[in-house]
Image (cartoon, rainbow, N blue to C red; front, side, top):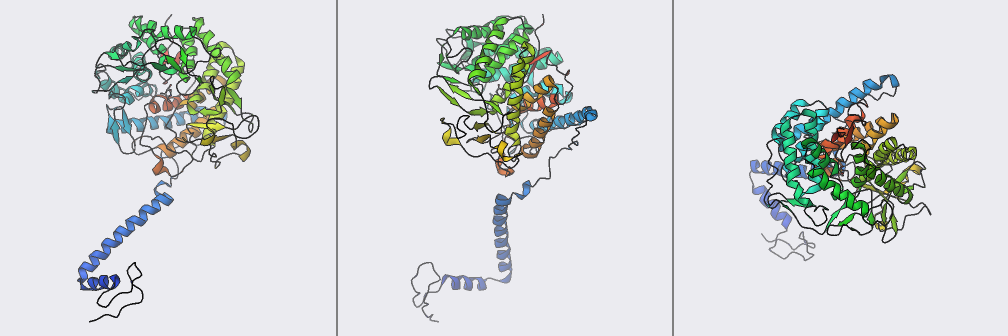
Length: 565
Ligand code: DMJ
C-alpha cells in the first residue's frame, strides 16, 4: 500500500515524508498491535513502574516527604520552668542525653567497632586516624560518667588490646589529635576505673609520640611515623598543635612517676613565653620549628590558636594555682584579646564576638568561628579562679552570641562561622571575607532587627561540634542562671531532630536547609561522643558531679583530677 506524503513529518526534522516512508509514530503503533495481549500488559506495567519511580524521586527531591518529622525520636520531657521542678526536669533531660549516647554507641558498636569512625548514614566505617578505634577511646569516660558500664567494659576490652606502636602502612599520626583524644581518653578512663591496663596503654601512646619533640628547639613536629619510631620532619607547626599537649603529658608524668613527658611539653611553653610577639600575649599561629619564632601575623582564638590559650589557664588550675607563669601568660593574652579582638554588634548590644587579627596586614576580620565559642567558658572559669568579674560579663555576652548562632537558623543548629557587620558604618566590613557574605536565614529570628547581627559565610555546616554546649555547661555552673540549661536543651532538641540517623548522629551540611536527607554528611567525629554529649549531660547534672573545683577538662572534654599535692 502506498502512503501519501504528509505535510509535516512526525520525525524531528521538518522534511516532508516521501512516498513509501512511514512516520515513527505509525511504525511504533504497528509494532505495538503486532504484540500479543500479554506482552502489551507486561510492557505497560513496566513502563508505569519506571515512570512512577522517576516521579517519586523528583517529588522526594522537591518536597522531601520522608523528612516530614513530627519531632525528635526520643521521648522529650516537657519544658518545666518552675524552679521547684528543676531537679525532675534535669533528670529527664539527662536521661534523654544518655539515650542519645547509647544510640550513638550502639550504632558504632554494631557497624564500626574497633574502627576510627562510624559513617552514620551508610553504616560503613573509616580508619582516618590510624585505625586504632579513636571513637571508642574518646568515648570511654563519657560512658563511665553516664553510668553506661556495660558499654564502658566493651570499649575497654578492645582498647587494652590495641597496639599503638603499629599503624597502617604509610600512615603518619597527627601528634596533637592523638594526644587530646587517645592519650587523654585512656588517662581519664584509667583515673575513673583504676584499670591498670588503661594506664599501660596510655604510656604506650605517650611513648610512641615522644619522638615528635626530637627537634633542635624541642618544639614538636606535627606528625609521627610510629612504624618508623620517628617524627615526620617539617619546618613549621601550628600554635594549638604544639601548645595543647601539656596537660596530658603532665598527667601522664604524674600517674607514671616519669617526669620526661611533662618536661618535654613544658619546654614548648617556656620557648613561646620568651619568643617575640606582635602584641603582648597574642601569638601568631605558625611556629618555625628550628628557631622557635612565630611567623605570619595570623592571630586567632579559633582553629589553630584556640586551645593554646585555654591550656594556660587550665595548667594554672591543674597545678593548684602554684605556677605563676601560666597565670601571667593567660592574663596577658586575655587582656590583649579584649583590647584588640573583641567587638560588639551594632544591632544587638548584647551580642559580642571575637574576630581574627592579622598583625602583618593590620587587619581585623569580623569572623566569629564556632570553634571560638569555647572562649566564653574559658573566660567564666578564669573569672572565678582569678577573680576577674569583667571577664564573666564578657563571657555572658559571648555565650549569648554563640547561642544566637543556633537560635537564628531554621534548623536550630549553628554554622562553622558567622560574619559580623562593621561597627563603624553599619555596612559590611572591608575584609578579605567580603565575597563570602550571604544573608542569614531569619526564619526563627525573634525579631528581624536582632537577627540582622550577622551573616553566614560559605561554610554553613554543623559538624557536631561541642564548643557552645561546653560554654553553656560552664556558664551555668558558674552563674547558676537556668537560661543556659534552656538554651542547651533547645540545642539538644535540634540535634535530635536534624542530625539523628538510624545508627547514630551525622554532621549536617547546611544549617539553613530543611532538606534533611540531602544534608546529612555521613560523618560523626569522635568529639561528638567525647565532648558534645558529655557537656550536655553535665549541664543537666548537679554541679558537684565532676565539679569544676576538682577536675580540669582537657580540650577534648576529658576530665583530669587536679594534680595530687
Ligand atoms: C575538638 O577536637 C577539640 O575541642 C579541639 O581543641 C578543637 N575542637 C574540636 C571539636 O570542635
